[in-house]
Image 1: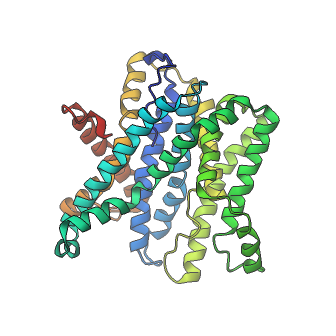
Image 2: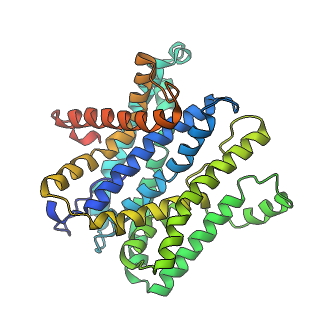
Image 3: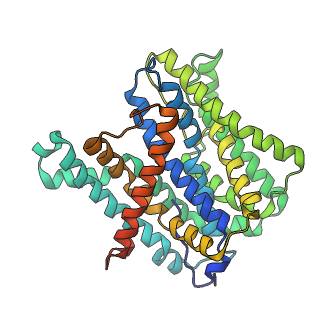
Length: 366
């Protein structure tokens, strides 16, 4: 979840904001909420349940959320074109995101103890400490983002001092890494699956390096990508194909296992790449051409600034909607309930964060 970067070497005014990037942040935030809804719902559903396929389809779409946020973060963080000093790096956005991570980890530790009866019988202090260090499952991306910020000086040098040939080579390596990661996921139903996975495992890429590829990729697309008409159409074709492949492989793997398994549903699969890149390009090439009034741009910017908070608080909102009002993705037909619940939970989360940021001394929490 990208934060707004305020750098002393940059002089952005409200009118210089990239509105399409604000809208992409909002869209990616909606996908984050949808991802949480679909993952939790799918795990709780039997394979033969009527709404399983619909929820699985939306999961295939929403998996692109974290790669999109990584690309957006890369544009915001590296796109200034100036190298930060270590002091600016450590005392600026890095400090903010570290404080936010530990604050919300502690908050979710308290939340877990209040909502899970089994935890209430344990010693309070050791349990709080353990849960804080473990953090909430949905916050797994923040340590990745912190790590990307830490290595950003090296990524900035790569971005600023590489020619187009090196950039293309880097993108090719990233795609190869994503392919290798995808092949290592457990294609047990394919011939030669075991030796293939053994071969791929000999080239450990690491999650951080693949996310670093996405961190750079947003800038590469933003600065250098100028596809011809055929490439553009192939790119847009990859979007629905990626969603369908993701959903189909999840369905097939679940059928083979006899229960829902999300082995192929990860942010670092080649199928997710096929969804994330076209969505990013669609916003940059098409949405950026739409003319918005100054008031609309300011409204989009305001909502975009709330997306980090939405990411942080939306599981609590979904929990409350379920336990207090019995509103879930299965309240009615998932074809309609999943997008409607996504929009409602996003809106409610955004309003809560907006209110919290108005409280004195609370503006730093998201």
